[in-house]
Length: 496
Length: 114
Image 1 (cartoon, each protein chain N blue to C red):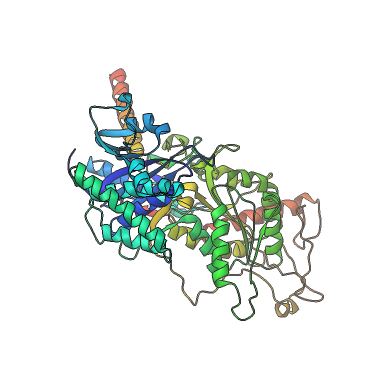
Image 2: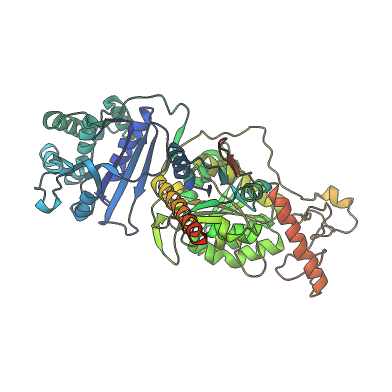
């Protein structure tokens, strides 16, 4: 195998629920701390415990953050998936396994290298607590990898110290396991492997974060005060992140008052209904869900579109249809989201590609929803939402004002002759709205999903209905100038 | 090339890999729907656009056809829907394969007309 510096793929094969996630993340984060671009991806089953799980780490000096095919090094600690894992190693690649048990002959290939480390045996000898033995077995392979791949041991130790801060016993045990792995690899293998790491300074100010956390934080910065949701993979951690940051930023330090509301509704229908109700009443509200949730929210999305109520939905897409593959990624909800609900409906979609854009677009969606008085959907996916990505740092201008859209105050209403909730005063298709109770006698209107005229009065008059539908289309045209512009990559050498 | 969302990183890498082989492609990353003027202009100024997406039914391609009245033959789908994030290798191979097939068809056609 030819020599490669900072350019390879390692895949870990583990049993779900054995504590491997934190060891594997420790491996990826160490590389990040060494200043080298790294992309970790968690490939996990929808069933909770006992099934195979994989963690793929791509290291790329050139900074490529997407997936590539071909596994250079497989770390297999799951007998269940071993047959498949052996097959998946690139010719000339390496296969690390737990050699506590002899490797069955059928798993031997003559075009790959084998690295047997008796992880379980070493862990059993070194530690007495059965649960700890299992967890520390994972740190033993991190130690072996550190030697084989030329990882910065000091960086691993710092991370272990950070992870178990204040828990001296755990730190000691992890350090011991790490050293066991390091020593074993040093004694039994040639190191480093032909592909390995060299410290760089390529990360600069970038951060390692998942898209769901970025959406949750973006919602806080974007001024959301209400979130109504129903748990669903892979979007649940958007709600968790929102709650986490609300607790940090939205509790009055003097009074302890919570300046936010998070409602776990009875289902997705109710969640969307609550978002619409809160928005109608003047709050910035949002929900987060995945494809099956968007299906259930269709009816309410149609109401919000036609009654022109702001709403924000973060759709962390996963493979469908129906329950599909809940823990696998896809972009399968575009048509469902863009044309959600019956009748002529179209919805604004924002399509972030990175955690930075998850943060920016979630904040922006709250502005757009109020400016356009319509649902805005932020379309991420499981890969972006649940995996850690290297991202540009988030930025927020302190002087930034929220765009609350066309909302008439009591004073403004005084100067309005007859208030027309669905009247296109400015010629951009966007009417003026009022919050309930703004003025004692003016600005009231009936919010409904049925056909109405410019003054929100019920009508079945075809001409009035058509005028309203055409105005909504005009608003759609206005939206084109408000959403983020596409990014162009022009090749100078290219021709039509 | 046209792509959006998490396909960005693999698409950018595939673009570089194709360029290394002498195939230089223009590209656009869509960030929102409805499509702005720049999307319309990009598509109308190219004869062939590879629409890269991670679903079975080429949903973005369909939205472009519906919203911009683009001729379907102009939009070649590059799709990934096995539940794993799309790879640069997949994008590169599909584009290379499509173009070599197209070249072969043109060649076959020129033989029959002679």
